[in-house]
Amino acid sequence: MGKNNPFYGKVRTEKEKDAIRKVTFKTGKSKNKQGYIVLHSNSKRTATTEHRHLFEKHTGRKLNKNEVVHHKNEIKNDNRIENLMLMTKSQHTKFHNDERG
Ligand SMILES: [Zn+2]
Image (cartoon, rainbow, N blue to C red; front, top):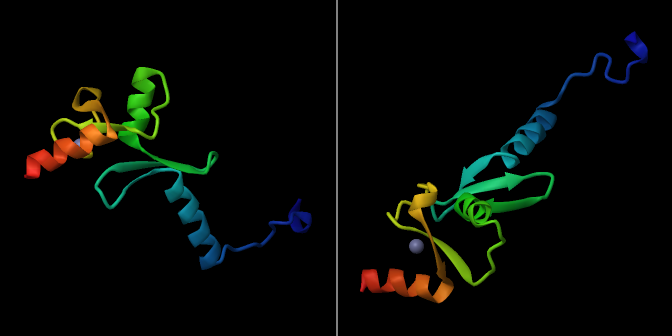
């Protein structure tokens, strides 16, 4: 194609490179402030915690907003299915409060 190619001689600027890096980051995994692993999906434009996603896959249904997936050993990035346990929001809050109190 040579000079008729629209990308002929085109050099990516730092700004463009940075934009590409950001997109790559979004499609991967990261950790949130609470220490949970977060999965980013560009196609769906959503971010979900990995343990919730794994638990939903395990049970074959979507969890509702009142359901919390608790880490039995308290290690928030240990997302083995045997370490995960389903609780309601109030059960979960009570569990962690009792522990501290
Ligand atoms: Zn918990």
